[in-house]
Length: 313
Image (cartoon, one colour):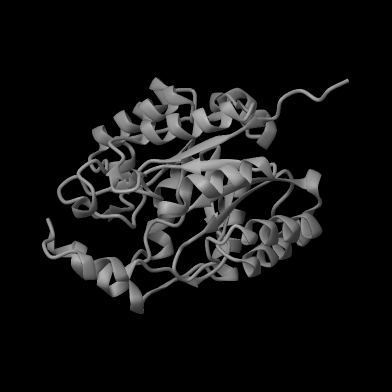
């Protein structure tokens, strides 16, 4: 009997903390903009909504629970999609700031960077002459001298704090070594299958966007966790997004799109919404005879605790 068509989970990263308002007028900044953009992405087919918060006054990254409370409870009432809250926050945030809302909300899913790293887009600053807000230039140029910190102690703290509440994780791996970091925590029993590994390509400081690296990350994960022990998802930064996601899907992976990762729908053409990106990858995948997983199917695939066990406040 022929196998049924494979379901692919589409994650949409709505705003992030790296891109700034100057870089795109379509970047959602205020709580209402983030909610509206996330709802549209869910309606377009995203099963998981990856969320950051921003200061509504000037768009800078924010870990303030008061801002998240203007996003998550409202969004949860409007969509059935999985709400995935960052624990990465921003490179300038202390871990206490990054975890302030996740610790209170204890969501179905949070992102978790699997190591410290140089993470930078500082070359972009050389192409921007005028900034909307003073903080943008300082932040982007300053990234070349900032390390994103997530030590073994930090990761352990996050796992023990949120894992005990039933939160599962989008395990963000920016290079091969971070897969081995993940294996260390799996071996200790602090992370249990099924794993949801977000392999990230094309960030300065991480593994490059060469298509061959898809096989490197996939084969390494197979050796460490066994093909049945994890779900792989592909994140291609910037212009590499759609091509790497398409290749990854053919290799058996899920996909992530969104304005956090890429501001352009096509070469030189800015995406006007997150939903545009979801619709584009959905069209590509469906033309390749894949099916898009619903939120309910994604919850089952990832063994999440379910939205009925949440109480966003």
